[in-house]
Every structure is written in structure tokens, then in C-alpha cells.
Image (cartoon, rainbow, N blue to C red; front, top):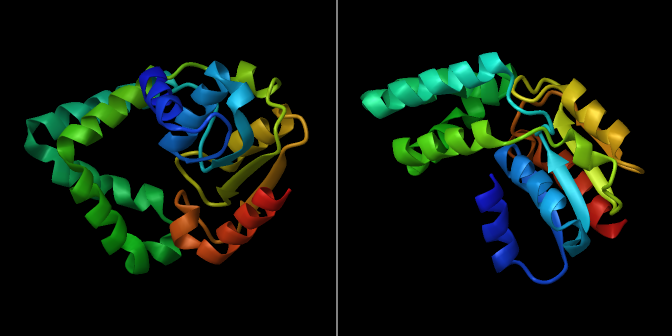
Length: 188
């Protein structure tokens, strides 16, 4: 995760606004650990500052093993219901499925390893001083509401936005509500 954050910092302007969704949020928090002075405003969407619990790491290792053995399609199909609110499965499953196929097994494995490598970034939260939006879908199963409440309570002045009837992919599932929150954040 640190290497990912450093690549973003190398490519970014000296000062910038930063928005991260899910794994992008993990990377955004790592950027805040490394170079908080470069970030003008921060948005954390459907993510967490917590490290993986042992059982999540064990599950990820199992997924990696299955994907590496040629079972990526099955691993991806099992994952899809965790990403979306049940009411959105039919409408957005093709988009999520195509995204997974575009990423492929090798990148999936690298992503899982990066996610498992992240540390506990909760100590970073209290030092965040830029305008911060913490946004999540109320029915996010992968990074539940309590993760977002914890981040918002720990970041001085952070604004928590909870999107109703929404799982882990707020920008896809509820684009109007997500865009409105982001426009407000950019104008803050």
C-alpha cells in the first residue's frame, strides 16, 4: 500500500484534492500518513482505516490461492453480492462483472496482497486537518457503517454522509447522491 501511495504522490501535483473509494481509500489514508501537507481536501468513500482482521486475511489468502489455481471466475462471482445492495444486483452486476474481468486474476491477487499489507491507519485520523468527507452506503457489507462513523468521529471536522439503499459501490449505485456530496465537499 505504501508503494501505491508513493506512485500517486509522484504523479500528483504539489497540492491536490484526494478522493479514494474502497482500496483507493486505503491508499488515500496511506497518503495522509506520508504527506498530509500535500492534500487540500480528502474524501473517503466506502473504506476503512482499520487493518484486516485475522479472519479477513485468512479469507483473502484463500481467495488468492483459488484465483492463482485458475478459479478467478468463481472467486469473482462469489464476491459480487458483497459489493452491491440487493436491489442493485440485477442492474449493476454486469458492470461490476466486466470490471472484474478487465482487472483479471493477476491484478486481483496483487490487490489482495496490497490490502492485506496495510497497517492500522486509525492513529493517522486525528492529525487530518483538511476538509474531509466520509461517505458510505448504509448497506455496505465490506466496510460497514461503523467503520465510517469511527473515521468521521476521529477526523476533526469531518462530515459523514450515509447513502440510503446503497452497498459498497456508492458512485455506481447512487451516483446522484454521491455526486451531490462530492460537489459539496469540493465547494467546502
